[in-house]
Length: 270
Image (cartoon, rainbow, N blue to C red; front, side, top):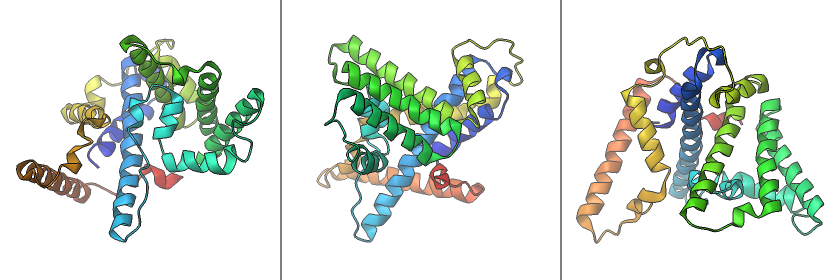
C-alpha cells in the first residue's frame, strides 16, 4: 500500500506520456519506480496470501526472496515469483528433458520455457519479448557460466549492475502498451532518442513523499531487516518496539486504504 501504490503513481505518470516529452533521467525514474511497484505489489500480495493461509492452517512457501539483490538472471528467477518458476520447471522444463540433453537441446528447452512464460502473462508482443529477453540472458549465463563466476568486490558489483540493468529493461517491455513504445522508451533511457519536447518538470513526477518511498523501497529490497520479525520474545524491549512499529504500519496502511479509491493488485490481471 505505502510503497507500491506511491511509486506506481510515478510510473503511471511517466508511462502515460509520449516518450519524446521526457528526458533520460525521467525515463529512469519511471522504470525504477515500476520495478519497485511490481516487486512490492507482487511480494505483498503473496505475503498476504501466506499470512491468511497460515491463519487457516495452510503453510505456503515464500514466493519472493529478495530478488533485487541477485547477481545474475538465473539467480533472479530463483528468487522472483518462486511458485511460477517452480511450476514451469517441473511441468515444462523437466518434461522437455531439462539439462539432461545435448547443449543445443538444453538451450532450446530454456527458450521454450521463457517463451511460454511470456505467453502466460498475456498474448501480447511486449510480454513475449519480455519472456525471450530473460530467456536470452539465461541461455547466455548457461553457456558462459556467468551465473557461477566468483570473484572480488569489483566482479560482484559488475554482476549486480548487469543484473539490475537486465531486469529493469525487461520491466519496461512488461509495462509498455506495445513494443514500439518500449523500444523508444529504452532508447530514451540511454540517451539515444533525440528531439525532446519536455512537457513537465521533475516536480510533476516526483515529490518529497515519492522520494521517501524510493528510499524505503531500496532499503526494504535488501535483507537488512530480515531478522527483525524473528527477534525472540526474551528481548522484550526490542520485541515491543518491533510490534509497535508493525501496528503503526498497519494503522497507516488502513488509513491509506480508506482515503484512496479502489486500486487492485497488478497480479489480478494475470
